[in-house]
Image (cartoon, one colour):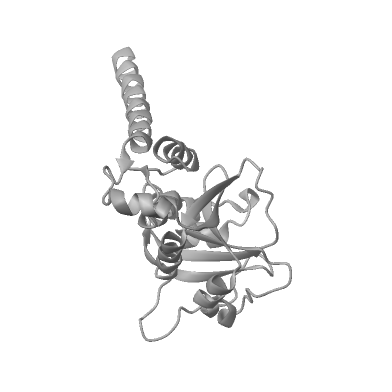
Length: 234
């Protein structure tokens, strides 16, 4: 009996150790590993900057874009779908990708149920959550400012837009009757969701496509934040 208990405890320790090492290496190893175009990198560093925000809580990150005319135009289908983005007092539009069951059915921790948790840990369809917000104090610990060139910003806007599910012949369609309050909306999104490749790896992927280095694997907001500190001089 003692031998079995000892083996069990050793197994648990090995699993925890492996997870810690994987998370550490995921943040430490950059992606992309090498700069693909150093000349372009230098040119982008002198270009006019557009500011975006990374909003985080202990388990989730959103990307917030400024409610500027080009952003409002790019996401006009959100306004057409029922959430008017060109709205008084709106400064930012936050986008978050996640598992449909967990995201929709768990607006607060008090709403947590076993079903959505199981879906998140195995496989779930994905959704895009869009929220319009007022001014966001940049000094908050939950807010990270990222400066992009105009070209990088446009790439990010395009990649977020293509994360919405669409048949290619019509704009994305909102999920009827689903929202936390009057200032948000949900759309079906591209791809399947699980906790290992979830909302924070989506955020990292969007940033990489826009030219920002992140860690190789960043499943937690904390590891994404570490990797941004490690691999970017912004």
